Image 1 (tube, rainbow, N blue to C red):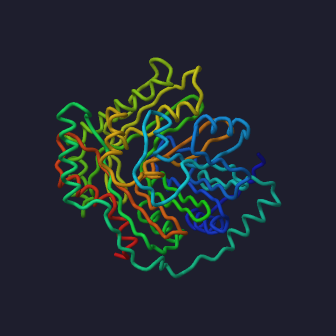
Image 2 (cartoon, rainbow, N blue to C red):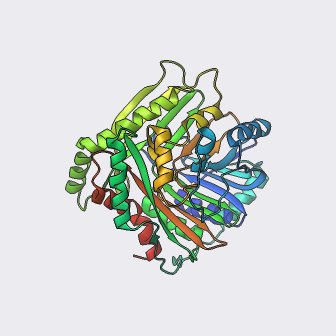
Image 3 (tube, rainbow, N blue to C red):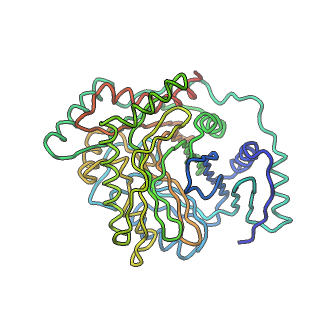
Length: 427
């Protein structure tokens, strides 16, 4: 792939202009790390894939077909895997209603690829073409008016009283030994939403500065993602997974912030949640890692984001010589932080107690390189929007353990969805 590079003085401004240009195409995907200095595994500050030379979208035998597709193309692929591909990994099913109508999987080989490392922009074109594209993007004028939509009120798919009762029921499953932990999610939605997806993403991204943010457009389907969590990365033969379990709000002052961080770090409940998922991830990695290579590089790391603090652990491993990169994604999918432990039983109960299909939510967005490397996030803190039928969805969830207090779990849902609700409600 021929590349031409430029030096950028205002990276944030260029990103916005490049995204406005990309949004004129029917398909595009931007992955933005927001200059996250805490992610030592990040390979790019910003990736922008635009227009499609070829498209992969399958509903059945996705992982096997995706491997064949990528092997044939030997190119960059950008896309997502929906949560409900769990049904291909295990003997499971999805019967809850789907209001968004996104494909189960979608990847595309981009016509244009732009990426930023440091202050250097690279474009997959020779110099004359790249210069013309660079100049065109730089000359784009952004709207001064920041109005993105009329205020949108979100309704809860499950009433608070029902949610609290279901938490009690899930805890009974824990007492009976069915599970140790389960991620239980609630959907907020609007059935007649009209938004400007790009400007909504600009505001979401600016206010969250999340390290695994993504703007993904597929015709009239939009994913506006402000994820703080990495699912799985492969860099040569090194695999990295960084599950999040443990969340607390930001403080009103530096002193309160430090107090809340300390409370999160020392919380027995949050530590128990985190270590259960670390063990689950380690177990997933055994299916495709070299024997003895799995290590917990960091346990109970406390990381600060714009609106919350999270407890994040880092697990690394070496890919076995007998396994391929797609099998690694499949065997670890879906990510343990969004299922529970044991994984299969938790997913069965998730299907039983949740009231709408997860779809892209708690799935994964990312890329494959020509060298078979990859990096995928966890789709949380996300707006899913079908522009055609005007359906907008925001899901959030939390880990339910034996120590969970139903009211506290409800409050955590409110905390996780607050930023998006405020953006949509104009608060």
